[in-house]
Image: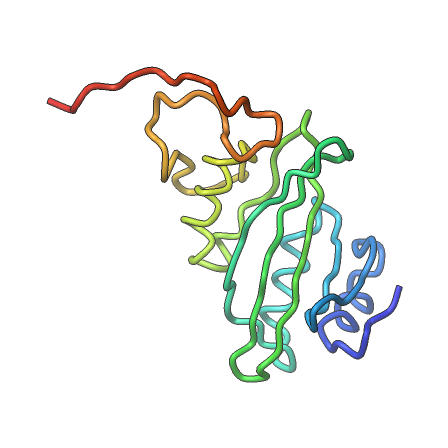
Length: 162
């Protein structure tokens, strides 16, 4: 595994060597694939290390890699305003055990982003303070950004609230 000159990747490889499964760089952003069980350790290290200071979670999303297993990747984009650098973390999540730890305790901005991922992909975030749909209505069946979601599926009609 290479660190591609990235202080963030060097720190992760040094402090959590068994947790980092692979590293790469694409389009100028360093990326580390981290074990799902260690994602909070990696996020906390990048946030709390003063030389890194990744105080901003700019995006949290998911990718459905069907038919590959594990099926999902949860993707975290971090930015350090003081150091002006970025890093991307990924954690792979299997379809049959579709959950990962919530990052809300480290980044409050993760709250609505995790709700969006839950709503659209069906990935649960353990210990999330309010994991419920954010874009779709509660009676909506399924998770429409999954690659196997039938695009012609009819949803239950819901009347106006009284």
